[in-house]
Length: 312
Image (cartoon, rainbow, N blue to C red; front, top):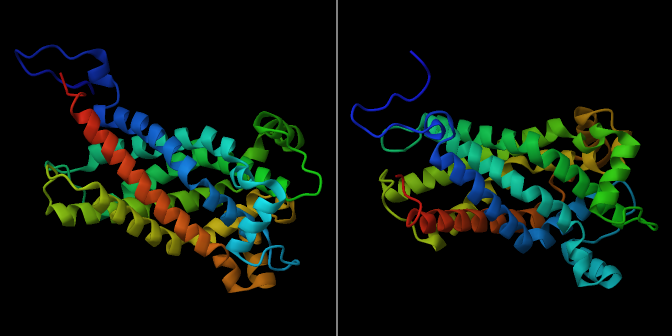
């Protein structure tokens, strides 16, 4: 028996796309996820910039910033308001494929694991989210984050060497090879995998609880945003230490660490336990806003297209 979908007797023959191509939900996840990612990052980037600057401002050296507010003040004073958007182009180039892989993978895995009512068991919520996180980590997040961190770190130097996205990527590849944009891939996979496992688990659990298991019920967008904020906060407290290690591994001084484990051990020995939670406040605000907005935009576009994009 072949793996193709068998047509129902008397029904219209299935096209090659319908038999072998991805499902409608998977395609929508890819397309709408990409659109969502582009909109979301334009709104939340300044908090991401501040978080990264604070994590790179190592406690073992002379601190450059006194806190998030001081970081904002110094950045605006030295580079103007749009200094808070330095590196945005890098995230825009990466956010679209990142969100596409995330939502496309999740929708695909969910379509394979959901029951007849379209619901997932708690374990499958975690596993589908984990799969989505690993997918985006390998295909989009690692190279994007590496370049972004190097760009932001470069700005803090007396003589910045990167003149733009293309020039910066060229310098990194020339100096370190293609592996230069895959620094910290292990930590990034751990971070994104745990991130999305937690977020999708919380979101799917809250949605299922709110609707009483009935997927036909619509949830208002403010409620979706609140659920997203809760999911985001849960992921922050769950994996900020991984995020700190990942950021150090992708910075301009990554060569002083032998590997991800060595980086974590050096942070522990030289800076102590609380160094793993450096940048938590700006990250918490960014992630709660980020995840809340992301799920609101994603669900809104899905509902809008449901009016016009029907199965033939």
